[in-house]
Amino acid sequence: MPGVFAHMPSRPIQVLFAPDYRKGVPYQALLAEALARRGATVRFLQGYKRVLPLSRLLEDQECDILHLHWPEAYYARRGDGLDLFRTVRFPFDLHRAAQKAILVTTAHNFHAHDRGAEMLIGRNVRYANRKSRVVFAHSIGAKQKLVQAFDLDPLLVRVIPHGDLSVAMRPPVSQAEARHQLGLADGKLALMFGAVKPYKGLEDVIAWWKKAQPAVKLAIVGKPVSDEYATHLSRAIGDTPHILTRFEFLSDDALVLWLSAADAAISNYREILTSGAASLARSYGVPLILPRRLDTIELDEPTPYVRRFTDFLTDFRTELDAALSLPPDFAVAATWRDACNWDRIAELTMDGYRCAMGDGRCAA
Image 1 (cartoon, rainbow, N blue to C red):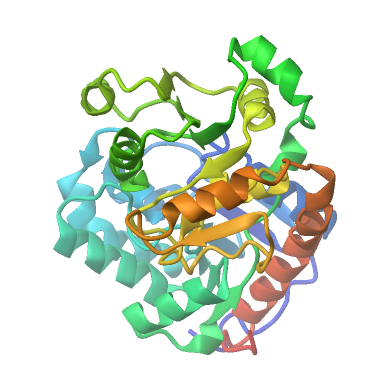
Image 2: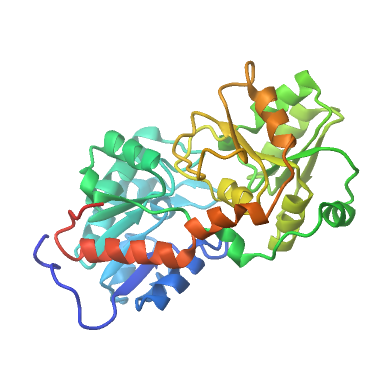
């Protein structure tokens, strides 16, 4: 395909985002708005086709760039697990789509979260990355993992920060006001927030809290992936006095209140390429504790506001205490927010598009 698209159109670049997940997180909307300020025309793939959804939908939606964000949307049903027929057909569907537009991918995940049918999903993730003219990764660590796992040319993988999600939300309120509105008592509070799913390693944190019984309240807040999983976690917690749960959908306003109320945040993903939740805690200046193994998440380190632990038996307690000794500070996170502002990210993304429309092997 090099040479076929090796030119820039005289009109604005037309970009089609797929899938449209704007209702879930603000990432795509913020990126699209910033790209529009750079002169790109950004639309979202719309419609539903049961068979070959990507390529068939593209027949009626012209674009220069097909920017694929979460490929699992085209071989899995959200919330219901795998769609076997789509999973098998996905490579052919994507191949046909790549004949109609230049394909670029943002590797938000290494694999689909909470996955099944490992061999088929692994094949599809590999194919999506290898079929793309440019792959965007959110960190150097993520790039290295993608290159190694999928045997990608390093020049095809471009590192772009995740982006500051806090701009879509209001600033924090005082801790006292947040706790009053949430009905929380005084005392130290550690927060795990967002969609409540197995890949987030909640059970390990719960087990440590039950055994160590720190004088710190652990709050697990967010909507569980299923009633069964909520029941599973509730049984694991039992009558532990220092763990509270709010298993419900978090509006942006509610999330700001929880971030304002917290003294620290905890992330314990099993495996992940990036984390909007971790980035959001960082943007709000909430001290964050996460495992050293998550070297794909970059948060402008070293900084005392990001604490890394090796495991729960050796140094988790030390890093938790260190995080709790710092006051949450929205102002101190201004440098981080500026480093991942959307205008900078849009410009880096446009550079990637220009590269894809050339020979696809630009210096990353």
